[in-house]
Image (cartoon, rainbow, N blue to C red; front, side, top):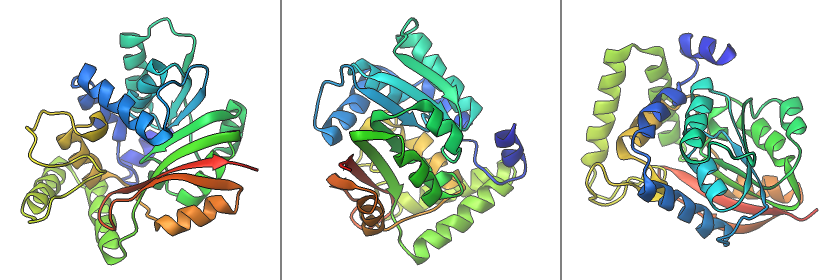
Length: 274
């Protein structure tokens, strides 16, 4: 498998292993938080009949949220372990749902994406900057948006020198053994806790909630931390560059939530108008 070989060579973080640990934490509160995050950005609480593509489904939590809101869901991920995580959630909550299809594939594979058809909502949160070719991945994925459909996208914010420093940390993590990886996670955790200003990772590590409490979007602090430190490949973009990219392809911007110029993801909802 290309994915497994890339992980062995220290070229890619195994997100699926991290998501596997997260699955035991998925409960009704986390699911409700995930659903609310989708509702808030899309501006609608009913996705009945909506064709929903989850690009890089990860744990499967947001595919589950979309299905709960009534969408006809197609989920895919490049990491086989992530695909299995998504299947586990389907078996747990919608074992007989024909309206939820799960498969393995790459956002860089034009033939694969083209074969899926077009969708009313294409959802890709914190994924395409980990493909190794972010702008090409964005271009391929946006073609799956139907006319009048929307794409809900989040991409790491470009912080210049700081982003380049984190790229080195992430590359070191995937090239290292368990001991060095543990030290990198512990050191990063200490760095974040030592900051005076509140730190927001992916918009999810907020305030002084108990460690087990669901974060924004139903996420988990420890899993987010490991995801952040190990998340390689890693690319970033300024919000204006994302806006211009989609504007030039016939999209209009509906919603924008930035990370305030700091560390984390900027979120975009854009409609394909022509």
